[in-house]
Image (cartoon, rainbow, N blue to C red; front, side, top):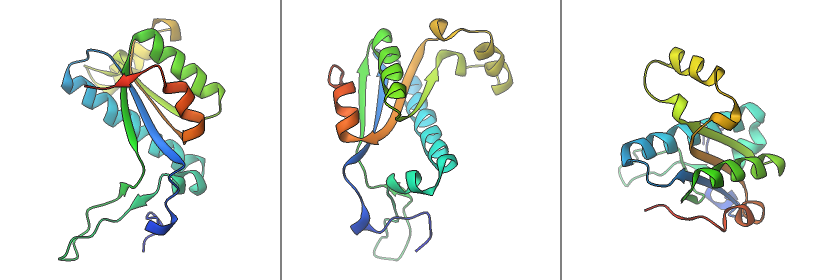
Length: 153
């Protein structure tokens, strides 16, 4: 098995992914924000060392013909929604708790990535409109931070 994949027996269900989306985003914008923020979490985990990336428990789902349908994480990925202030609060609390956090803002949409970088560089944190805040960590650390959010609809 590749170093990328976790043995199913080694999946540690004490860990999970959480994404909090800004309420009432159009579906396409919401899906884009979830995808970008979670891809960034995986990249950040890889950059922080194989132990953290290994906790993400990527599995190789094989079909009866031997085809691979992975890597897909064996862990929960919970998608919640909240108001803008709640996303900012969640981001700050998750960072303060030392959790792996990534976000996606309105400045990261439209135009080219070069223009998006300029928009971000010209915005203070207070000016940012968060579309998604994603985090990865232990359930017992994440659950208290997300209890005020509802499931995304």
